[in-house]
Image 1 (cartoon, helix red, strand yellow):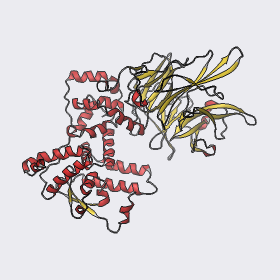
Image 2 (cartoon, rainbow over the protein chains, first blue to last red):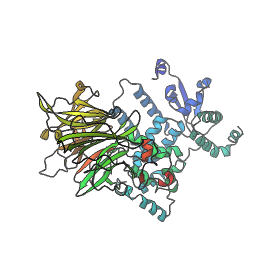
Image 3 (cartoon, each protein chain N blue to C red):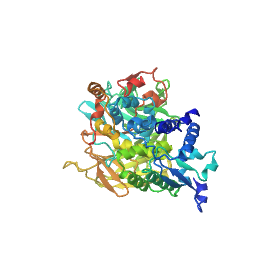
Length: 172
Length: 446
């Protein structure tokens, strides 16, 4: 697919991204262009390419290396022929999530949403869904840091209406 | 433009910029996003933004679309529970876009399993949600009682397509009901033609090209006046005028069971026939739902003369025949190219496995190949009701630990959906007799 970018393998253009806390990241152009927010910054503004620093207000530098790592690996997976075995992609994805706390996961979702990148966002929201599926309401509240604003009566009524769903939960 | 100048005032910037950027990033017209963000960035990139704290993320400031996206990836049971988390989530879980978003994800995930168990004189429908853990399925069976109430006490499941289940009375094969068992929405089909001393095979399928759903009914009966076996086939297209259309006789006898596999827009049954040189043999009779025509498909040359030793299943879109070898396990033959008989290959040979839960002295037996899951593992249903996952690469078996399984049941591969029947069919069923017992998200969907 990205044949034009591979032809310029002699010298890959770099784009500087600036995380919310001011830290700079030099990123290969094709990788940076995976992020719609960065891409839209340059559309119709080719001159900006040269020495523009793109500030990413909602992305903390803590998550930048992981996010870039995801893009680099996944764009490599897509280019490879024959496509990599499902197990390899799965192993990478699992390793990617392994040491991420719930909070870090949520922050990365916000970052991916801000960067407007479907592939990473889909992957992360799927991961968030996996972490809360078949879990108790209390677990989900703790996961997202939500306070219960129902009165006990209101909550009991909703539970009664959907009683079947509360049977057979996984352990928190 | 004036608004942007506000950003130049430092104290205001801390609050306004994140809000604007978040607001803008939620808007899809990207030109707006682009121009605004460019201006903000252009200014900010020349200044230090170290003091701009990254927003504290809680679910409250998670954009609505992102929250909906997460919700739409949950199994229905979790989605229903989410309503109890807080008021704003309750409202979000009833968002009108959610059922179709959820449906799109559910069709690409591992399917859920509907279990139909017959105990004494009553049937019971239960289901098992798909998950992604080690087990791939939730650890407990959930009941569909209270949502799937039908006037029928004894029924059989004819088939499942795209979230719809077709159910018929097990003795009279009438009435036939189409339902979404997860939300308890159902419609009853008009009465079909009844014959004395009839035996009936039913099928339910859809045409992927036109998304039309059809129910077929093949009746075999004895015409007493002349003592001959007659047949009658009729078909009903859901969402049209809802009448049974006769399509003439059935060109041969078929196993009097619901169709076992929907492949390429055709239903398939195993049938016995007499070959002049080879004697009794099995072959497949297919019914093409578009052309409404029968065809014959030869099975691979495995030595099998009992229809009960062979069942059909759709595996990764291919018509597949499972040959039961008794104590030696099963062979799975896959027809790589549809209707090309030379393309049958023996793809899997699965040895006998004794599930941990099997009580002596029952002999182990694989009842049915249920489906292939996303990671290539094959889900097997064994004779004592145990589910076992078989990994074709490592040739290893894994027992699924699921509590609350009934003693004896049949398994139907199903897509859990929150959509109403009319939404799945893409028609308005108001004119038909749609009866809704209870709906998930009723208040927003009424």
